[in-house]
Image (cartoon, rainbow, N blue to C red):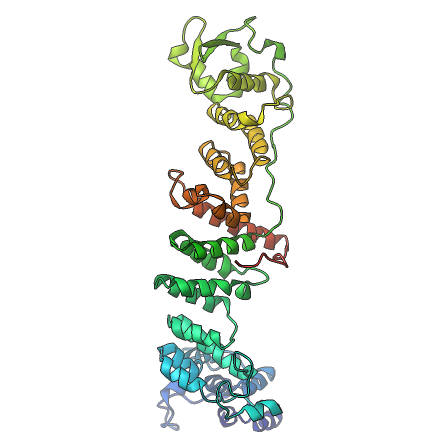
Length: 472
């Protein structure tokens, strides 16, 4: 135990080679023969002492020799003691930099940084490092930031962690200015603190560092904690530069792989044509008539009621009882209604060739009559038409008419082209920030789409784009 306490690895090795017990325990507090035992250390083993003192070499030797990793703590016995892991967690880091950073004493931190940092481990110094000891900052140093050894960088990283955990943003940024690399955790905490304090300049500075913290494979913390934070800043930011920085980050995270295509999942035909197409709008054998834009359209119940729940309800309503029913159709143009009827009679979309300017109106009719096959066809056609100048219109139509595949495609298009769209005109800004679609959170949908995209990429072992678009 004394060898572990004193970090005397050579004596520890010799004792173990001579057969010393690995897991001998400190006696219980208040025992008859050991009245001076400190109650805090009762049942401690050599490994517990090594962990509490931070003596890594001695701890490694003990573990390699088979020391009990739980120390003197056993679940089967009532022993009031801590495990080596618990001791390590409680004791933490005794670095002066970390203590100062955790308590927000910036002046003391600057004083410590103005002096040469002592190495916490036995480290071989180069001649350059020896000559640099004791020199003033920026003297004989052409670089913008001082050069640190590995142990010093580790101490500064720990200090950065402590300052970010305790929301001392000024200290975190100052340590970062020394060239200490970000970790995702520290960067995220700093960004949240800057957002809560409404420090727009600091937010922009942190966002500029995104590519340095962007992991090769996005972690669960990034997907579930960092992305919601970024979208929250995006939602409430009033500064155009910040908005564009975030938009570019979102596009980078989404990636430049092709957006998932909308495929027409409807079969080529639904059990063949129900009735010969010549009977479309043919009064022969017709048993129902529609009035559209003041013009009559003849149809057959057997075709309509089996294909459309909406038409079945309309034809079975009390308004259609008795005689040859005439059903009034409002808000749908005559030639659009004719295309819908052709779809029903032909049992599919294979012969349909509606002009491009009628697709959105046809999609509205397909949603009204609850025709899934026709709706999928319209989604497929619309996806090929999405562009910078119409994506907002496509998005709104997709949401209103329950075209979920088209909505997902539009979300992907928005993510990949967000910077260009935000600078194209104000329609995208109104869509994103002005709640243009009632009872629908556009940014929430984009966040879910981005999270799903990253998860799918990870599941397929896709790499993040190796040449990401540079931050503006």
